[in-house]
Length: 212
Ligand code: PRP
Ligand code: URA
Image 1 (cartoon, protein in one colour):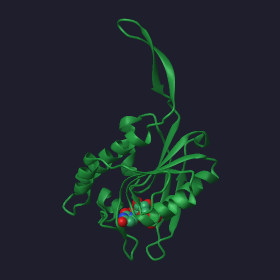
Image 2 (cartoon, protein in one colour; image 1 turned 90 degrees about the vertical axis):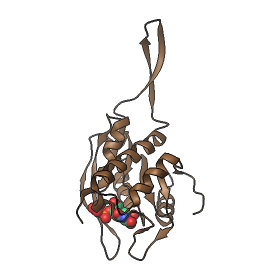
Image 3 (cartoon, rainbow, N blue to C red; image 1 turned 180 degrees about the horizontal axis):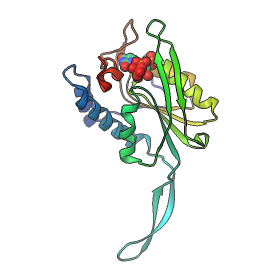
Image 4 (cartoon, rainbow, N blue to C red; image 1 turned 180 degrees about the vertical axis):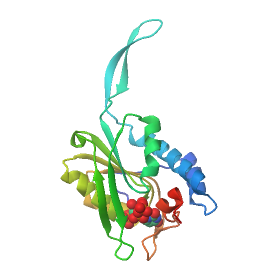
């Protein structure tokens, strides 16, 4: 994949270790769900590096000092249903006050085009930094559609957080929305003819919710 501005691929042995287990066909729902959450927390640490902070005065047992705390109410996460739901708790571990919006999107299995079926966003989302959560960035169609929807609601500060991406999807999203920073834990080899990521992990929604 060509080097793209605004794309951060988290390259860390702890993440690689967890992704290896996540991919395995032997990993069942409970462990899969826990891993999605843990990997998301690790990506959050990087993606929130420039989260807005404010100065506060703290009295230690010895003296007063000026410290920095994150600005609450500045962030909203928007999981793309269904699989994005599995990432919410991972963000909340580090940033418990993040508001949560939901966008329902599924891929038409023949055309691979995203179909929107649900949208409920927090009030005032347009003034927040919005992080779209979806573990899989395959063709990039769902991410692009979710981001277009958020932009149509007035959002201007949007990021995408995914666990596994295909080069095709990262390139499509980066070109369509150069203003959106993309954080992924891993970029895989390619898509297969059904739009699945190779080697990937299969269908993330089904593995998270045990539907197949
Ligand atoms: C998966 C995944 C993404 C989308 C990625 O969802 O969670 O939303 O596919 O593919 P794309 O980049 O080609 O658009 P899916 O449509 O399977 O719905 P589900 O989460 O309800 O299973
Ligand atoms: N959605 C998934 O859940 N997995 C893929 O490999 C592609 C899209």
